[in-house]
Length: 400
Image 1 (cartoon, rainbow, N blue to C red):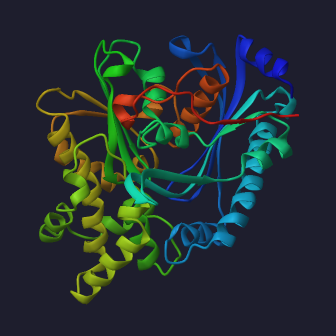
Image 2 (image 1 turned 90 degrees about the horizontal axis):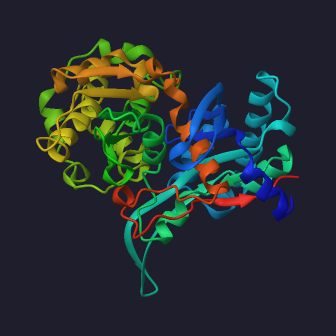
């Protein structure tokens, strides 16, 4: 594709974009096909279709193994980068086929990739203090196999601008929900929980957003251990529903240092991943805690970290009247009940009620960010990531 073709793509009134997301739960690739009209603050988004393409057990285990400092090796990372690139390309092909739209009519792919490691705080190396992040799922493979211009590797530019590289979804939250003058809290519960606060009548520079703490990550791991791998998550909260909250354990969990750290902040598997979950489960087993009480309590832990983060970092300066929930956590009624109990008299709605499938929100976000990149617009929110300036995100791999 020539520069002239990229310019023509940028000048189109509307574009068909496929957003791809593989999150910290590593359950599969979310692919969302959208029609985007305009760009910047005039962006309008219409969802055409959404599908999740689950990873098989081999790939899921390989991602977890590769993401762990003790077991990840450069050869595994190198190969998995290209393997995931092919799987992402397959997801694009399948969602287009499902919607009966030829790949030749897809204008852009926006791929988040799969995070392997994320270091949001400054670390010294060779007399340089740097933050860093690594997402894999080779964009060149996606562009080559689909023929579609692909935008990927969004987080690195924000880090280069002295930001933490996350969260990036607040930009799309504002585009989707922040322009009607209604104050909202957009709460995503994926592997990690993250929140965006949109004030009534506020502008994008006034957004507050951060990672609350663990989302489904610890719950998923406990479900996998308890069922000897038969379940990858606590379906409908059935395991937790058989247990009772252990308040002493919950109080201990709530002393985790990340939870008292003020925004801007971001977290991930490095804090609450398999190592944390396995160590915790081992200690609880040694203490002879009932396994259902254990998973009920870590489910409550996710809800408590969300509610406590509101109290510490949003209240009392800003009143919360409506919370919109998205992500895999919306499918866990036990988690939602704990959240309602901790939040009290606050209206909680699912994002589905606003026309966006709960599991599609982040895929939609990276479709929007890809569109912004093609149009030359910044996609980060410095007040959220800590970056010194707004920057255009991602790398563009031209299609055929």
